[in-house]
Image (tube, rainbow, N blue to C red; front, side, top):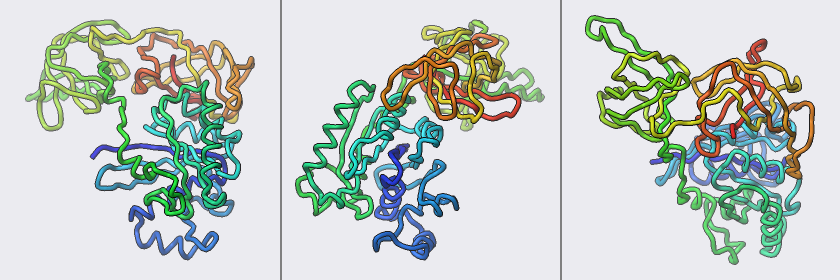
Length: 410
């Protein structure tokens, strides 16, 4: 079975944690001891507090909010799922970015009583920024508006209107009640006007095209293998995970950033040698020539080389309490590659509610903006929109070793 990774997003109290709890509960993915524990913890409006299945931190339970990203796993006969429950507060935007960066799909919750609000704009922008191919807009708490089709259609039109200027490729709408279970795992008897699928049915059937389907071959080198034993005296292999595309024995390849060229001699796997390897296989590649290859280098097929540059433009989400100011120096980490870098300029800051590009001299915690970065040596990369694995990066403060930003190259 394949794996679908998705994130739930939305404003505070829109029912994200309750929705995930409902999916786990109704799909029989909750252990008996977990169920007994949340039953002892209390109920909400006479119903089991399903949000406690994901809100595990003490502060989350005390305040009734989600603070950190919680990951849950479950499966059905059709598919396996990894769920990221993202917090809805503005001050936890960085957590939302972290959860969405590894997702194939976003479930965006809207309270049927409130309609589209500020956090809807913000989270929709982040989803579009991270190029998630599918957005499922779940209009929740339909039980509190008497399961009104008119309310559902009004909010749907409202969302479609504001999202016109966003790069959202595929938007789907569902009327649900996470607390009551309507249209989550079972079709609702309260909404006979709804002729579509349930949320779980949609998640099981949706066809996801991941980075593994990208035909462009990219292989970041993670480790150089030199056993230097009697049996493998002359063995020199380059180990790592194929991020996209495929490689075959005999392929002409280029090693970046050096630009040296060679051909693939052999491809080794844990189970033995293969003639061809695909993403996301972990392999060791041997080359015909003894060229200089180190951790952080990228092996690419010579007929499909990426961009190589020291001057990079990208959009970042600032994650540190200390503001980002142009001129500061950081460690730039992209896949297995790490290189010293400095932020040359802040080109603009984005207002995530209006999507307006604004002049700014700094980025504060949770703010998003476009920057120009200068690296100490050339970096091989693809635009994030094309390949996530080679187009994404983080910035690390060398003094504290803290990750201060996550970004996408353009």
